[in-house]
Image 1 (spheres, rainbow, N blue to C red):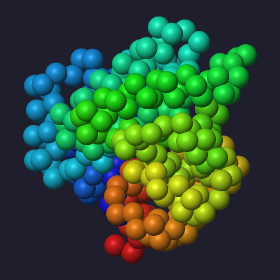
Image 2 (tube, rainbow, N blue to C red):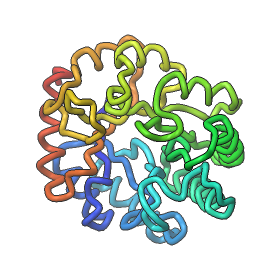
Image 3 (cartoon, helix red, strand yellow):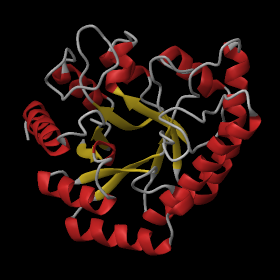
Length: 276
């Protein structure tokens, strides 16, 4: 297992500075945000991609994942979603994801993550929303296959796909080697899916992990690891049981006031659990 830090905690800084700060904390991996103010695909051109790759090489950082979940450049964290009643808005999400996949290939990233459908619109049936999601994902997955980048869905509390059973239902409707799961440990804790068992249950789909802690209340608010109720010793033991050797990205986007301190504390705590 390898530890990375997401630049979505550095939304008050340009991407180049976020890269420098994360390297100085001691991480060897970095999750880049495919959104403003970092690498919004629609406005990120070859010169900036080259500059970012050179900066990463100079600082000894590997891209753990490209995070294409948020669309603040258009609206917010979850909108436009894959299941908007308005077809024009759904198209914005689909096209953004396709552009993010192409940008990931140019950056040398192996995966991108996206939202699990989005908030269920009022009056829309869950299965009707699932059909819209599958239709959009299938189109994006054709691009994923073309460029060789995996498209990972990240279940989240309160959105269309929020637990293991719903993810398995989604997976039954998709047949692509480039489809997978971003296993967000805190999210599964919020919906009361038992973490060690769920790690083993979904291991065939998992290609990347997000790491954060959650309070005993299970309210969806990302905390620094060690400040909540998640038993990370059990979590990492379960991950080891699956022979996963990829990236685990610390995701602390609420800590905009001091992302360095949050990332440093998380790294020290997780290294202690991992016995590094």
